[in-house]
Image 1 (tube, rainbow, N blue to C red):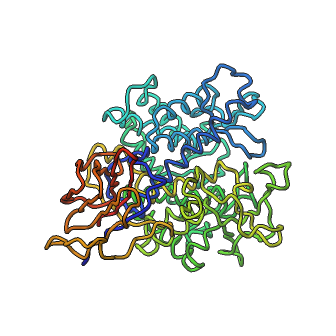
Image 2: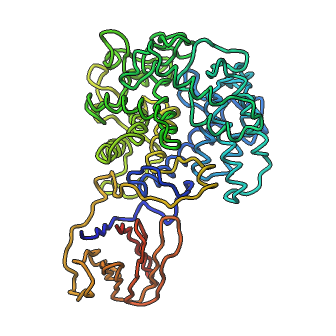
Image 3: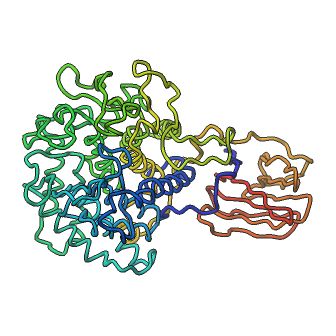
Length: 562
């Protein structure tokens, strides 16, 4: 079978990505492309949700703070901060390989009482932090610290003023203290809102890692894993057969029983519940848990029956409306600028948030066709189009303007004005990072390294097009072991040609240049100063960057060798 040699424009790419790179055999689709999207969107999130927040009233009681809070710019009280953001922010910083920001966010959580088993919300006006722990934040902070400790011990990260291991243990102590009969209680160790449970908090993959790390070996973390799956699969959960759970669940499995943000009594598959797909997918991919795969198979079967990627949304779970979208006219006014009707949105949501979360089920149990289809759907919510503006690289997930923009009777308003630019960005990032093989079990892979698998290659963006085979210009006699050559068209400045020659590339220029070939991690693979050179790729497969430099400038091309 002919080896494909794809040539892509490089205008938007760099020779190395900032995301964490650890060899892994997880399923992947279009990984090389999505990694630079992750890099860009992380930079945007820092700018919008961390840097811009530093001048807001939330810091008025802490004028000398170094910052680091993850603010919600369009919450019910814009530019407040919650402990959830500390946990999510630390995880994104970790997988973005950004230790400086990781430490900054964690220290802000401690400074403002948003650390584990402390408060949950810092008001936008800078008032006192509101008490009551958000236990999903507690477990996410603890996991992030465990992974940071492993990165540091393996010399992937440098020394820090934070004792990651010691603080991780305190986080685990907090989470264990918030368990009731093996189930994580919202609200912290005092019982919080139990027996109302938020199933989007349940993180069985985290509990397996806590079990290995925890210095207190008397704790039965397996009980928490089992209890989590038992409540998800409870016979009173009407959504299990279609791979969904309600936002809130009572101890007997019946929907409801929640408090904060309990839309429709917490009985629908809405913004809290959708996170269960991501949390359970981690257990399926990292630990091959059959209960996770069974649940996610139900999820995938359902969403495919509704139309696949186009059906990513929130759903009702009960009675005759089971499996139906949320009511079409139901608007959400509390969030996204409560006093600004121009930013209100519908609760139905086909967006980067919902696509990003449903993608996690696809990556865990879907086939190759599913993965490609969902990757392309996500690309619709990242406005990268080199043909329109090659210099515009979005630093956010979403659309600047909904193409169906109109009044509320004709448009769903899926654009950045009508979304939070906080929760939606995180949940999209979780899905894309899992899809790209960036979101990995750091401890397992650094302790027991494996060979990397490339997954499904290519690009989800239509403007990154594989060039068809064509003869070289001027004609070049290919080596005897060459397949039909596929080339880069002559460059106007240098007259550059890159031609496939069997297991490598033939590089030609009309003038003297310095050739360099790097992989996407920035490692130099080949260098030569000449008009013509040949690179033997050996066993190399994947994406590489070919550059030709002369006194008049540098030309770069992105190539995919399969």
